[in-house]
Every structure is written in structure tokens, then in C-alpha cells.
Length: 96
Length: 377
Ligand code: SF4
Image 1 (cartoon, protein in one colour):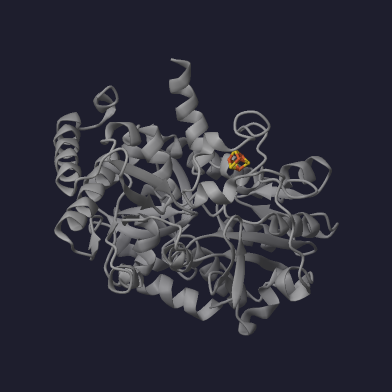
Image 2 (cartoon, rainbow over the protein chains, first blue to last red; image 1 turned 45 degrees about the vertical axis):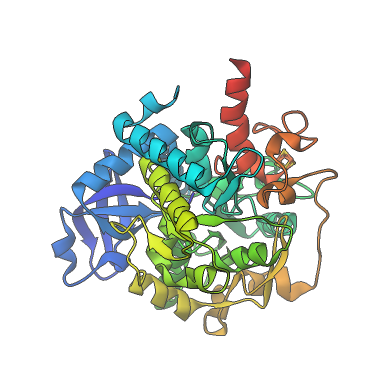
């Protein structure tokens, strides 16, 4: 649970709560961007970040993102993280 | 070199392995008198087994799998307290999935859920916050668990809950920190450790300076490492070179992600919301001073220990670990997983007895998953 997964920020969804939509291996997930924010939130759109339990923890470059994803895939971590995201969505669904 | 072909860059792996072999020779280490290197992070433990790094490296080098998996070092008593909170009818208990199968003395969270407790697996504390917003008539408790990588996320969530005046959100805080247990291991005269591979993502938050004492006070090298197999091999080589040259420094192999000073936003949030507990119990290591965090008084209304009167404030209740369980000795490198009497019989990943079997980052689970595979060949 201590590894992070690369994701690309595609849109700022709630600037006041510092939330953005990230694309994580093809899955969309809202993440908090407080830890990587310098300047305007909009400037993060398109950036790659290392995402850990829903928080963008560090900016990384695209090549690093690709390498990391490959390592996570072979460790089975990428799949585990995507499943955890789906579980999170299901937990939210349950309280609609 | 059976496993080398699995690497993204097998040529690079071969050349680093050759360099490792050479330096191990120069140090004069042998199978009888090896150099011992501890990897602290559970993610590294998992990668070492997954890629068979322990078998690729020379016999004069031994890995010791450190206490770096937060699920693995959680004592049973804390799981008992989770179950106790989760079984309250007004509570929705939210947790990372990793913690679901950790055995408690009565039951695991998974069993409690099967027995009817409202326990939900979430990916992020943000999910727990959202559940709290959507169900104002229920108490939503988040099981805050993890090292410094995870701590900022609950700190920022608590700050957010405070801004919104969310009255039904609390965190059962079990955050722990990496440096204090390392100090305990270094102070233990029976531990033989020649150097450390430091955790990559923890260091992304805290930077490299919290490890200065390892080099300065104990004269041991530490290299902060990424978790790709090549990162790990390169870091091991850097540790070995320090040993050979008689140096003890904090080096950063993972500088592309880890800033020396850490992440200022994360550190500020942690400092605002948490303070060190005088002591915290670790499975297998006992109580360690200032190794766990509690929620500061200013955020008391978000502290599940206070709201539900459990935990350290509510009196001592140490729970015995299962008979014959060797988790503590495995975590301190004194025995190998297969030397535990329960290994592979009464303790398997499907039916874990000890926590090191639960998470894929635990030494026993990694050993079982990849070690057993080889035995079957
Ligand atoms: S085999 Fe099970 S009981 Fe034994 S040390 Fe490993 S996790 Fe603990």
C-alpha cells in the first residue's frame, strides 16, 4: 500500500478543495493536488504525478511515469491499485 | 542468471550484478561471513522476491527484510479496537483493503464485515470524507494506517473535514514513522547490519535528512532507492561501495522523485495535525518511543480514539501474539520465514496467522508466493 501509481492530471474539478481529475492507467479518479501545487491549479493540467491513496504526492516526468507503471504492472501493484479504486467507488455508490 | 531476462533492461542488470559481485569480493564477504543489508520498505521486499534479486546477487550478500510494511507491524490489539469501533451500530468503518485480513484476537475486519458490521473498503481517505458528507446521520470512521507516505493524506483530509465542520468524520490513527524502529534495530547488540536501502516513497515526503543519524551516529551507509529492480540493484551497489571504501553516508539514488528536503506541503500538514505519541506498540518489536503519531488536541473532535473511548487513552491491553509465531524474529532478520513453525501449514496467504502473511509486502507472503514457486520446480 505504500507505493504510488503514476497518473496524468486532465482537469481541475474543484479548485477550492484542490481536487483534480486524473487519468490513472485509463481509469479516471479524482485526486487531491495540494502537495504538488505551485501557482495556479490549471497549470497542472497535463502534468504527470505520482498518486498515492488519492493524493498527488510528487510531479514526475512522462518517461518516469511509463517506467514506474511498467514496474508496478509486473509487481501486480497496478492492478491492485485499480481494484482498490473500484472498491472505493463501490463504497461511495453504497451511500448514495 | 535465470531471472535476468525478465528485466526491462537485462544488459544493464547484468552489468550492475557483475559490479556487485566484484565489490562483494573486494570487501571479502563470503557465504559464511556475508554483508547484511536491510531493505526497510515493504515495497522493496516485494520487488526483491518478485525479481529474485536475492538469488541473483552473490552468496556473500544477504538481504534482511525490515519492518517496512505498516499492515505487518500493526499489533493485534489495534485490530481488536478497529473491530470494536466497527461493530457499533451507528458506525460506517472505512479502511484500505490491505488491512481487512489481518487477524485480531477475536476476528479480522473481514470476519466482522461478514458478521454484519458496516465496513467499507476505500481507496482513499477522500472516499471516507465523501461517505461522511453523504450520510450525516452515521458516524464515519477512517482507519488511518501507514508510514510517512500515507500520513499527509489523512492529515490533509482531517484539515478538510475541519474546514467543512464535518461532525460525523473521525480517524482511528495508526500512523507510524520509519526512523525510530531503525534506531531500535541499530541499538540491538544482537543485530548484524552493515547498511540500509532506504524507502523511496516515504523519503519523497520526509526527504533524506531524517536518516542522517544512521550515518553520523552509527557509522552505517544508507541509500534511498526507487523500487524498479534496476533502482534496487544500483542502490545495493552504492551501499556496498560505501562499505568497501569505509564510508557512511546518506545517498539518494532516487533523486528524480525524492527531494533532499522532502515535500513541504505534506510536512506542514503532518506537523499541524499530528504529534508523536510517547510510545507506540509494534508487532514483533514491542513499544518504541515516539514511533507513532496521534491527532493533536486542536483536532480532537476528529479523533476516533477520543470519540469511541478506545486505544491508548483507554487503558493498557496488550494482546498475546499467536503461540509460536515468529513474525518478530522474521522482521528483525533473526529467522527466515520458512523457519517459523507455522509457515505454509497453519499460516498461508489464504489463512494468515501472522501479519507478515497478509500483505504482499510482508516477508512471509513474498517468500511463500515466490519461494514456494521455486521449490515446486
Ligand atoms: S509464517 Fe506466519 S506466523 Fe510465522 S512468521 Fe510468518 S506470518 Fe508470522
